[in-house]
Structure formats: structure tokens, C-alpha cells
Length: 120
Image: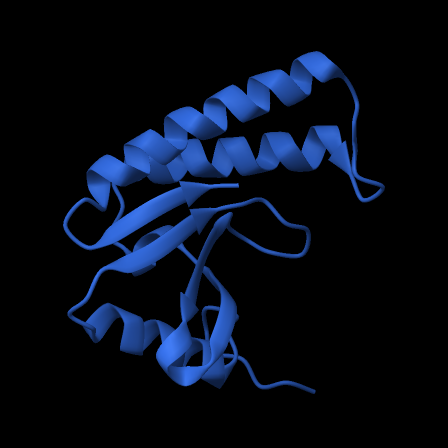
């Protein structure tokens, strides 16, 4: 069994997030939905060879409104996209994609001082 912190992260993940928060250089945040994760936010810690670290809004101090919007967007994806990599309709896919671009733009504004943001 893997030991996890209160946030559900392994000790390695928690240490990597703490290191990233304390670094002085630009960070690179990705907005990507994936199964089995709580949030659609990802980051790497290349200095310590940690890749695809799932992060959360509170790791960046995101606003409540953006946090809620990210949760709704991720929940929408989970409701309309299945593990066989298919959408239940092209309209739902288009809606989700357009909303993702809007959220990436909002993330860029809120993280402007610390990170670059990429969407999918």
C-alpha cells in the first residue's frame, strides 16, 4: 500500500510540489483532463526527474471562481467522455474544448507571475 498525505498525494508528489512552489524560475502548468485524477492541472519537476505531477488549484492559490470553473469543466469531461476515448456527442466535445480554451486563458491571467500555461 502506498502511503499518502492528507491531500491524497504520495510523499514524492508532495515533496515535488513543495519544491516547485519554492523555485524562482518560471513554471509550466498544463490543463489536461485525465481519468483517476482529482484535478486537470499538471506540472513537471524536471530538476528531480518527476514527470506528470497532478496538481490542484490550492497549489497555486487560484481564485474560488476559477477553481469552481475548473471543477465544472473537469466534471463535464467525466460525464461526456469515456475510457474508450469517445465523446457522447460532437457538440459536447466542442463545448468542452471551447470552455477549456477560456479556462486556459483565465489560468494564464492568474498565474502570470509564476507560470506559463498550456491547454491539451
